[in-house]
Length: 96
Image (cartoon, rainbow, N blue to C red; front, side, top):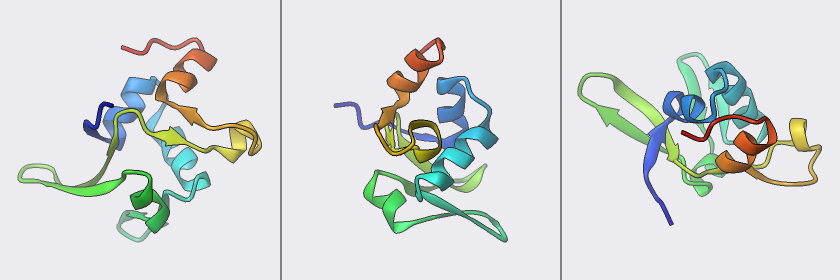
């Protein structure tokens, strides 16, 4: 299993979807919440592999497992779980 952690921005690039769309998916999945300072990682987000990472140059931000599974009720209406590969396949996107 690949446990590589990547930023939300990197994950959105991997999925070839706009970051704000991915943010909305993560909010719908209750993995993050909006806050005054940007986004807050929730307990559910932590349970699904999200954690904080501090970089000397870029500051502190949330990172996710590269192959995270996102239960997106908006897209799936609660019927299935999508991971990065499934999302790419569903929308005919490159996984590279």
